[in-house]
Length: 107
Image (tube, rainbow, N blue to C red; front, side):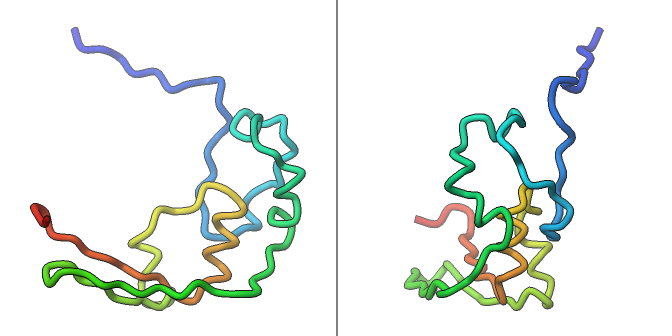
């Protein structure tokens, strides 16, 4: 007889979205936010502001490739879908992603 997998019933449903408005602002009573200092993250949860953007440069061996993709060029299919409001906001405020490909067996 094969084992039966039963989904957990004590967890809130997981929302995955690139839109920050799909997420509720956590208040600290949610299990996944229980040990997070939400008072320090409050401004990020409500309306994040980008004042500087990181500069990404890659110096890699020949087998490794790096390319920049604009978000409109299908970059969403290459990254995990955000599971919280801050992650979705970061995606919304970004213009591009840097994709680094490392072939299997590279040293």
